[in-house]
Picture 1 (cartoon, rainbow, N blue to C red):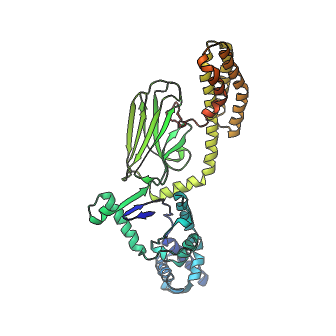
Picture 2 (picture 1 turned 90 degrees about the vertical axis):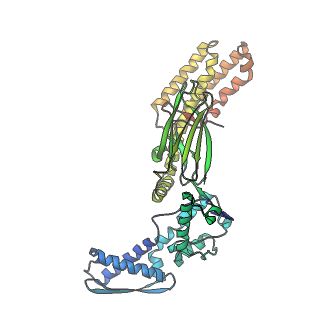
Picture 3 (picture 1 turned 120 degrees about the horizontal axis):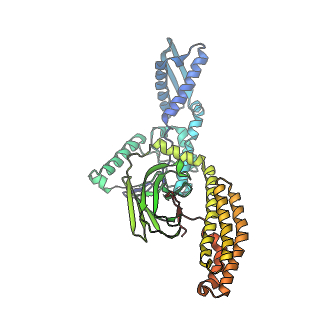
Length: 444
């Protein structure tokens, strides 16, 4: 978070909502149970929930004591079957027992720094809040992470949490107060927001950790010839494919004028306000058609669910990237063939024999694409190279012949021969709606 006067801007958020002081209590309780069973063989204390609860309360007290002292004694009278239980525990032993838990503190810190695109030397203050921030080992881990930086411990860790929650609630509720009116809180979007494009790919428009409120626009176009409508599906998530993301809403934009694929220009605007309301607007320029939808945060995900989604995105990142590369390679091959077909249409009347030969190769190529939907990226790339070696000399020959006969002299003399070899570059990553209504982003 960056702070300037009464303004506070959240740069990034990260955390582990399943990690806290209770995890330390549970680990210490488990250790004490094992010590009890070792000292009193045959006594199964686990069958008594009341005994476990009493032991856990004492372990929490020991944890608090060891935050300020180096030694503590755990004593429980008549813990189980009339047996008094006593155990001396040092701070070093507590740190050893809970070491795996304490190390988990590093993960959200690394994530927050990465998302904020900040280096450790750019952090001015590290403020510790929350009850577990009193644990010396936690303080040491955080300080070491920031290269030995002195931590800010002046804030009451319990009051800070309570006051922060109250201030946010007051701001969102529109409470009128002299203190509240002076505060400006700039929050961030916890998950990326985008739409589905051809191939079931997630196209983020508002990236995760974008400041709220925010508004972003991205250009799209159709995938099929004479397409008159598109289905716009809005998703949130960090995965590369919409099947792994959360569907927020959808609507159809119809009435688009029939035109060749790639011709219509469709602007998709996502606007997220401070109350979490997302407004999605689709605007098609040529036919002057527009439609929008507002998505409320009534079904917003819990913090635990947000953390799960982010972790899944990290876990399956490489798998998603590999699948994305395969789909993009397939789309590039298909787009290349369709672009050649479009170029050759202008020569069909004057050189029908040669154009028909090219058309035959294109049809064979498209049939091959339809029959090989799940090939590796290298297979699609190799097929495209093979087709280019055969088709592009024919396209160049048609273009030169047409130029020599004087047909289309104003256009073909210089531009058409170059467009044959450059056609692949024009369609490296098309952004188009497919026949079902999905689409991809148009190149800038």
